[in-house]
Amino acid sequence: MKQFLYFGAFALWVAMIAATPLLADNYTIRIAISIAMFSAMAVSWNFIGGFTGYPSFSTAAFFGLGCYAGALAQRNGIPLVMAWLFATLFVTVFAALLGAIILRLKGHYFAIGSIAIVDLTRLITSSWGSLTGGGDGLNVPLLQGSPQEVSALVLYVMLAILIAAFLTSIYVDRSRLGFGLKCISQNEDAADMVGVNTTSFKIVAYTLSAVFCGAIGAVYASWVGYIDPTDSFSILLTLKVPVMVLLGGAGTLLGPVLGAGVFVMLEEVFWANFLEWNRAILGGIIVFLIFFLPNGLLKIQYRALYGLLMQKLRDAPKQAEKSS
Amino acid sequence: MTEILRLENVSKSFGGNRAVNDVSFSLEEGEIIGLIGPNGAGKTTLVNLITGVHPLSAGKVIFAGEDVSRQQAFQAARRGLARTFQIVQPFPNMTVLENVAAGALFGGGTASVQDALELAHGELKFVGLDAVADTPASSLALPNRKRLELAKSLAMRPKFLLLDEVNAGLNASEIDGALELIRKIAARGVTILIIEHLMKVVLSISQRILVLHHGELIAQGDPRTVIEDPQVVEAYLGSKFAARVKAESHHA
Image (tube, rainbow over all chains, first blue to last red; front, side):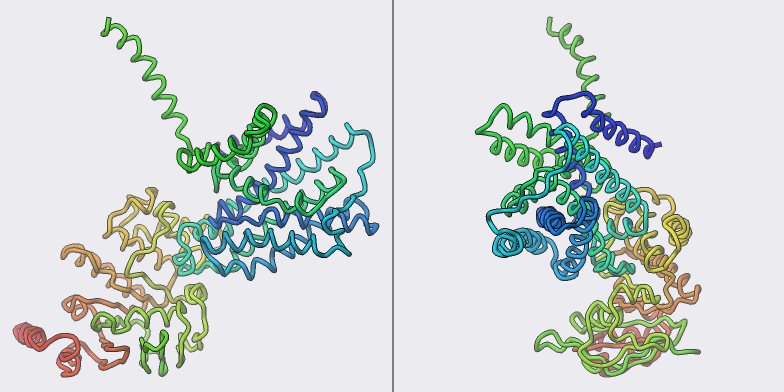
């Protein structure tokens, strides 16, 4: 029953986003693409950060490598879709190899190590000028079609990646793998003791958190037509995605999607209305989150809250009578 | 009787500190063995060496005829070498049932999560925790947490179970309950090595006793002989205690 509710809510949300090219202007479609893109990355991060409880900040490295792998493949004559697939594969292999090294670290050390990966990949990209164009960035072959057609295409591809990520997370959640990851997040030593091969489970989770980010990066590069190291390997991106998941509810299925949607829309509102203050407001949200919503929007006891509210409303007239 | 576990000249050093020094012994299938010794004698380290938590500095561990000296902890669990911790290690936010199912799924190697949950139900019944199956593990009080540890280990279908102070922190009647449970586990054909400080418990349950002191095995044998061993009296029991136990056993 609860699972049908999940599927239903997700399907409805995806349908709403998918309908924007038919109903809304280009500005709204842009927001819809943003939501699909960040939702897919948030769902990905949930594998390592939510299920496994390892605070990874590598998202931007995966995204950036996806951008560059896709762009370079296309510039070397590989057709569009093949280039996207190549980028995805490249990032997957990269994450698996890297995971085998970096997942020897735990807790804060892992967090610092994973954020260093972002800077490292950015520095390599900007220094390796002969391949990547260095700080000048790269032009990516433009997608064919009118602006409306292009944004609709990008939106649908991003949504397809989101759906793939979401279905994978449902599968993982129910499987032996997901069970093991939850054990690791609660007590890694105990997980080891009951026979969970913690190292390989963590590597799989870390790799899963990379696959879809790589794909998203490649599609993003084709969409914007120009990439450079600062934009592709952005520290802000690497922080935003975990914040979205925490906002929605880490370790839950719908949380990342909810969090990404709410976050992107809030950001849009602040960006549009408080051009100079939007970063400060973003910081405020993060602080609020840590203090008041440590388990995210999904874990709020809405029913209890509703009951409390109704109680207050019912009591209010009585109180008024008494005092009069 | 067949041999299930053999240690050959096992040593472990942490820096310059030799925590376990040249320990050798052999255990038979189906035995209950007590492992005693003063604090810091190396009992828990020895358990950690047998279950692959720490790598050996020297020597060999042979389990069921196989050299497992270089195994990792999760491999030990899958081979049927299960253990409980002195300080209990539950998965706090999972239900009691899920905790036990984790043991069945990974250590016991059941085919699916569903099978693991079913097997876990059986083990919870066995240790008497079926009434709290769906409550979070963090809500249990200490005696039940110890039972949960046992159920989790049993769900791993162990051949050999190492119990590290399962009775620490329990009161007298709770200990009686725990002992009865340990006997029931032994009756299932599981070999048990029990680390225990309460001599009364060790003497009543063990068929054989190993004594560690400063990382060395100073005595082994049936309980009666071991407590009269002058070296053991000197190192661990104290002469008064030894005399009292001796007197009590004469009356009995």
